[in-house]
Image 1 (cartoon, rainbow, N blue to C red):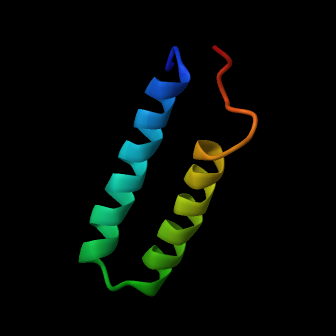
Image 2: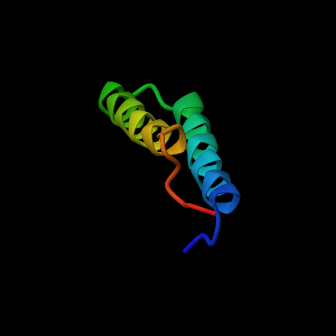
Image 3: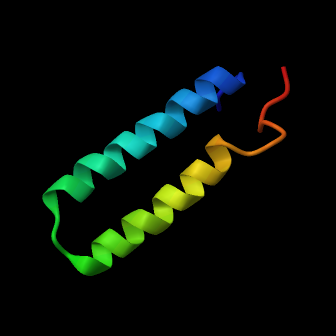
Length: 55
């Protein structure tokens, strides 16, 4: 479990990077829809106010 917000954000950005790499190599519409949904959920965590972790 991440101990601070910076560490948590790094994990979320890593997840976004993975989705981008998968998206670049697939043409499957169902997979692309799922990727878009996952991206939206990750970005909601990444940019939420107040932050997930209080320092």
